[in-house]
Amino acid sequence: MISSNQDLGKSNQNKKDTIELEGKVIENLPNAIFRVQLDSGQTVLGHLAGKMRVNMIRVLPGDRVVIEMTPYDLTKGRITRRMR
Image (tube, rainbow, N blue to C red; front, side, top):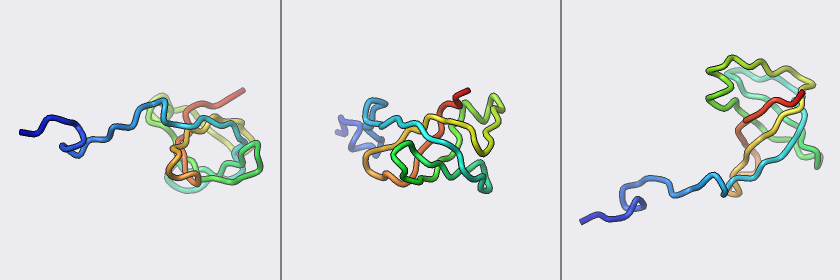
């Protein structure tokens, strides 16, 4: 009998396991991927979150964004918010 989510292959990662950082978009790449320079100076790749795609929120170079990253891979993240 399988009783836990881990045995089913489902992820146990919660939203609280993510790291939210602010940065500036420096380059557009294909397929809604952007190169983002964080406030710390590190450069990461970020893709648009689903809500931003559905609501057709435009992100351009020079925009400030909030990027959500997992502690397991600090080179990629998900862009969740565009700052004004």
